Length: 200
Length: 200
Image (cartoon, rainbow over all chains, first blue to last red):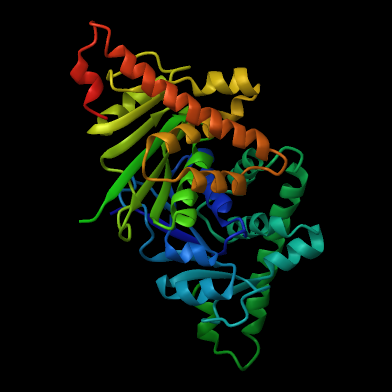
């Protein structure tokens, strides 16, 4: 079996997770030229305002396009974090929007206030998903920054290119800071080191 | 095994097939409240400008979200029609954009000039996908017109609501006409009746 990498983007309807999944899949599949499948499923839970979008990347043709064991989980609200954390691999990466997620299931989580950055820096909550995309492309080796930028610019409305490019950059900067903050936390005696270090 | 209905929307990149898939899935899954999975896959062929989007509907949870045997194929260009027609069930429905598809693999195909209607009636080629959605919702029993309209209005840019509502309606009217035209063709002796009638 070849290499397979599974991502789930989860949160509330209206947080732009479906567009985010499409952009990420296009970045990987069209601009980086790999095999990728992108899926969303709707059922009774969609009526409650939950939203999730999955991106599966592989070096072979993807026969089964649904995530089974996540390499990366983005949780943009507490409910999604609680519900989907059990689907994450032990060595998988959890990224949360710390604007809404306050109770962490693991100390290894990376906390980034995507929505707060969108509000405060851009006065546009709607770019929280693009900030999160910038952070993801900084934190995972499976997609290039250049491919993500090309895919974003191909999908966002005309006239919003600068806003979206700036949002991507803000996400990358925030991701670097979140990694540093987590490293610093290692120095505080309350948190066991092995919980913090073994995922990187 | 429960009821399962598989749709593939296919054509070129830029024809809006991914948005169309999302709107259709949201109409079925959120507004009509059924189980639905929506997928796009990218691989080497995506670089050549091909695009396809799939929507699977079921009355049970969908374990395998990829289409295996199509109930409905929309082909918005000749290449997609040639490539995917073999995946259609014998009793499945083929709908083609007759602006671009001139060689039909079956006389049972419904021919509707989506792109030409978009150009001539709306002066906006970009609404061809919404016209096609209107036709689909007229031609299949699996989604309600009301759900499709709600899903379209929730996804399209603000200020384009009237344009999109009119495009949906144009698609419904065109679908009715295409069905009549196909019935009329039965009367011409060159076409064997059984080829025309056995899918309706």
